[in-house]
Image (cartoon, rainbow, N blue to C red; front, side, top):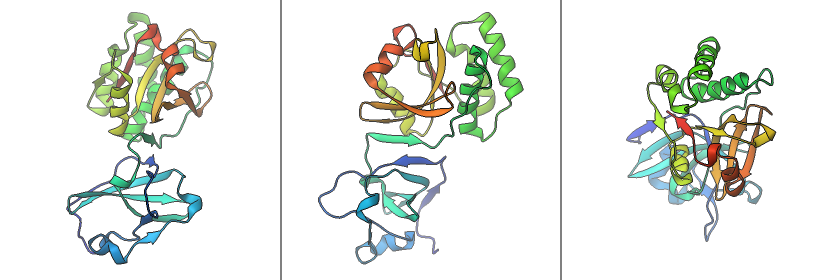
Length: 232
C-alpha cells in the first residue's frame, strides 16, 4: 500500500458501532483510497450496519482519523467520525477463576487487567501480591505497585463518576472495579470493558463470561456505595 497516512497506531482491538446517518453507510477497502474516497466508496449491506465492528488499527490522514475494521467477513476503513461516541467495548477475553475463593476472583480480575496491557501476566507474582494485600489492606489503590510494575502506569479511579470511567474506556484501557452484593457475594472484583448509553459491559471472573448491567443496577452494587476502581 502506498504510504499516505501521517501516523499509524495498532491498539489493542476494540469494538465500535456505526452512528445513524442520513444516507447510506460506506467504507473504503484500502487507505490509499482516502484521498479520492468519493469514487472509491463501498456500501455496507444492510444486515451488518447494526453489528459490532472490530477495530485493530488507527490511521490519521488529512486531519481525519480512520479505523481499520472487520465485520461479517468484510474488512476495510471507516472514518472515526462515523462511529458512535456512546459505545465502546474492548476485545478482552473473559477468564474464569479457578476456584470459588475470593483470592482467585481477585487474581483473575487482575490477570485480565494486566494482560490487556502487556499480553501476558505472571500469575505467581499476582497471587503473592493479592494475598499480601488481603492481609494488610482494604484499599484498592494499595495494589498500585503491582500494576505499575507490570504496566508502568497507574490510574486511581476511586470516587470518580461514571463519565470518568467511560473516558478511561475510551482510552482503550479497562477498569478494575470493586463491587459488593453481585452474585450474592460480599465483595468481588470485575473488569469493566465497555459501555453503551446506560449499559456497562464487564468480564466477570465468577462466570468467565462477558456480562452486561444497567448503570442503575451497577450503582447499587458499588463497594460501600461509591466507585472503588483502578486502571493503568
